[in-house]
Image 1 (tube, rainbow, N blue to C red):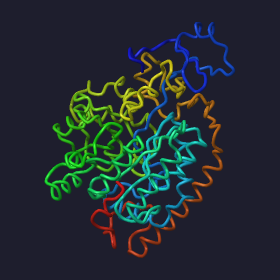
Image 2 (cartoon, helix red, strand yellow; image 1 turned 120 degrees about the horizontal axis):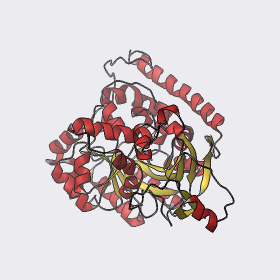
Image 3 (cartoon, helix red, strand yellow; image 1 turned 120 degrees about the vertical axis):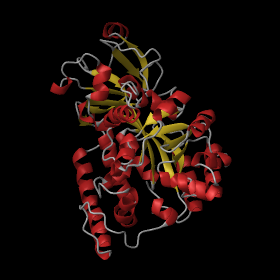
Image 4 (cartoon, helix red, strand yellow; image 1 turned 90 degrees about the horizontal axis):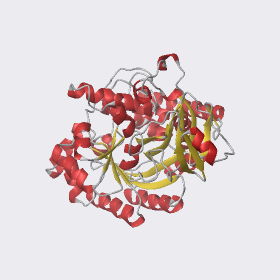
Amino acid sequence: MNGGRQVLNPGAVAIADGRITAVDSPERLAAEFRASETIDAAGHVVMPGLINTHTHAPMVMFRGLGDDLALMDWLNQYIFPAEAKTVSPEFVRAGAALASLEMIRSGTTTFVDMYYFEEEIADVARQAGLRGVLGQTIIQFPVPDAPTPQAALARTEAFITRFKGDRLITPAVAPHSMYTLDADTLKATRALAARHGVPLLIHLAETRDEVTTARERYQTTPTRWLDSLGFWGPQTLAAHGVWVPQADITLLAERGVGLSHNPESNMKLASGTAPVPAYLKTGVALGLGTDGAASNNDLDMFDAMRLASFLHKHATGDPTVIPARQALELATLGGARALGMQGELGSLEIGKRADVIVVGMDQARQTPMYDPVSHLVYTTDGDDVRDTVIEGRVVMRNRQVLTLKEADVLAQARQMAGRVREAVVQTRAQAGAPAVGTTAAPEAAGAPSGAAAKARP
């Protein structure tokens, strides 16, 4: 994914002190370097690690919890009751470990996160050897780790102070959205991010409801309302951007805002189709995300690449839209650009951080292989990743994760899942609704309303 989009066959990468020191033929690198450790990737693909630009890692614990429902039914009947009764530092650690295991095994080396108790996610990510741009969530009403927006802002500043300058963790400020925060709090989040020089993460125009809310409250669009507050600028990453008109796309490009496209979540929740061709044509820095596994239902970026390409071919009626090479770029260098980290991540180039994966190409469905880029996007799954290297450290070798005890992670997750099931069963029994695991869509008895009812899409 360098400037010339070269494919070296055969090729080799030399790594020292966490950075790439050479990319060339195996013969030339063997003549120039002596390695203490060598990964033999003959017959496979060596490529930059994948960058997931939007997720909520601990929500893997809600995977499959109420599928095939409208967004608000899903939130009110399943997710809100589960979060209210289960989210704690212990819950977040268990979910973050499970998510880290899944991401490492499927080739993600950098992930962007928004959730509660984000310091727990950061600790787990560092242990796992994952790179993270991690945003402490700020929202207008009481949540598990903060009773008020002011408390959330204070927690965020403490989080930034603790992790700023870390080699793997980039702390961020994460106001939830324009419809769950008032103007003063949104301005305060921008000021906090600017004061510390850290990224600012927010959901933007994910659903039609958000656009309607902006029109009714402020007589404008979500993008324009945030712009009127001085919110947009470089180091700002907006997630989704489904309902954004061309004039607002142009504004986002002018402000240097990055955008995360989440095709699987948008399709599953029927939120709509983001205008990705327009974003690309206008010059918005665009990356790919999975969103949380509660609405996806996995963290596999190979799936995200494939669905991004297929979705926009289908939506436009043009089979040439988002070709394989462009989809691959969105998951690598595109994600790095969206984060303003293209000088450090996203391609195999001298001086960049050594985030590298080896993808196996020896399965029946990958044979024959005429074009490795086509195979990566249209054929490959996360389970084909053999080796994952982050900051020059081998965190998975021959499908064995070296930084986490897989059996322990799975056991803890299964134990926590029992608590989730119990919490939802109790809540739904009180409401006279079917037990967890059904796909019926009963009326939401006692469901939150207003901003609270839209808090966590």
